[in-house]
Every structure is written in structure tokens, then in C-alpha cells.
Length: 111
Image (cartoon, rainbow, N blue to C red; front, side):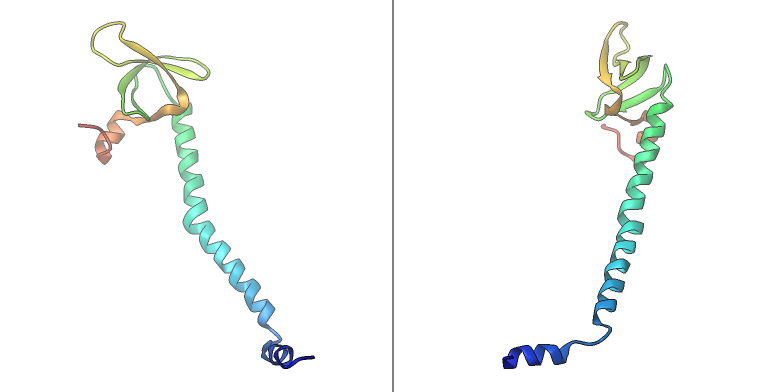
């Protein structure tokens, strides 16, 4: 054996591997509680909101278009976007962002 190998063997501690595993597990737990869990909770709230859409509800699309739901289908929604009759667009349910009242309360609405 050469001198470097002997020096490396002497520096190893008997519990060095266990400390590494404890550190890795602690990092995963911290990431779970600060990053993964809040994101999953937010996604569930958005999914529940989209499931609870109703006709005549004010919403905002992901593109910032304000409108009132006039018809709900399986995968899309018909929005009335103007006070004039028959100014409607068809959008995907997944592009509905939030209720207009909620967005206005949090300051997310366009002015």
C-alpha cells in the first residue's frame, strides 16, 4: 500500500457512514415539508376549484381574460367576455386561473 491509502484509512471514522445517511434523510424531510408538501396542497386546491365551477361564476383565465361562465362541458368552458350578448369564447378548464373576486382581493387582477 502506498502512503496516501494509509492516510485515508486512518481518517475514516466508524460512524461516518451513519452520519451521512442521517444528514441525507434530514435534508429530504426538510425539502418535503418546505417544498413538496405545500406544492401538492396548492395543486389540490386548484383541482377542487376547477371541479366546483358553476354557471354564472366570474373567473379569470391563465391569459388574464375576465369572464362569466355560461356553459360547462367535460374538458372546456364557454365564457362570456363582454356585456354584449354572444361575445363568447371556448377555453380549456385547465386554463381557468381563479375566481375574479378572489384575484381582486389578492391583487392579482389586471387593471
